[in-house]
Image 1 (cartoon, one colour):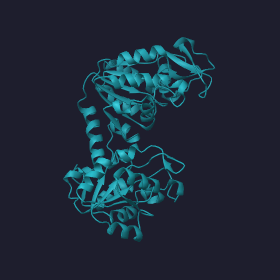
Image 2 (cartoon, helix red, strand yellow):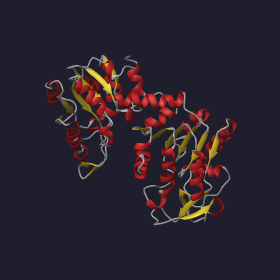
Image 3 (cartoon, one colour):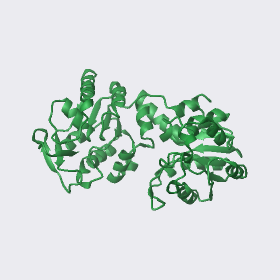
Length: 392
């Protein structure tokens, strides 16, 4: 696919699909990471005197105008980050928006209102896509996080615009993830956690042939422990995925992948407990549940990461939102960040956990995608990327 540098954007209206789905607290942006991630693309477009039209969704308004999910605070914050005014449109389609877009001077920026205020966005409605495309002379996708969605602004608009390509953020995501799948530096370790095996079976099966080490934590480890014949007390696990977990463990053994499962756990009566108790696998009380990996498991996982060449991380190793159950994730994350290795993490909870551990910037790359990150690693073709490849 083409990148923005290969597109004729000088003094043209450039429609850039960004991902500004940011957390809001009392009408203010609580975390501007996603805005900052697009700055290299925006600054390049500004240097080329492009007329920039930005489009994004925020939250899930379900096709209705929800004032609390307006992108107005984003325009304000982006103005601050760019050091120039970012104009804000009251809608994303219609006559008034068209007037604002066509009146842009070279080097000006316009942010459209929330795309998902219209049902046509998530339905990939052709008429809605045409209305958006009417604003554009050039289309740029810089939103990897939505590339797995066949939405109007992701796959519809490119079919009605001649010049299309990827922004720097999207191009970088594809480059990093492709290198992991095609030619990872070895040994290659996957650290995977979170709650459910069900959402990650495809990723595990696709990556297994490429892996040397597989470290499994979080609540999903419970399903693997049950598959391995262990009892997990009152811990959450997916009974319907025990057989899938067995298949993954068998496949790993057949392919020479070393699997690391917890040897001890931090248990408590409920997720809001002020502290938990460290017990080995054979001492989990029937009325208690596991909420973090134990001290010996932390050591085991940390040692497993010694000398690896590539580390991919998805999912926390415990209920990190509660400080009582955050120690496992923090210790292993810091160990990963300290390695002389290519380190990449993806997924909202994962990035929040790494930020909490204070080592986000120590990772080689942080993927802005959650579902898109997993689907790419699963080997799936992402609609948003395919739409750009067709235009190259």
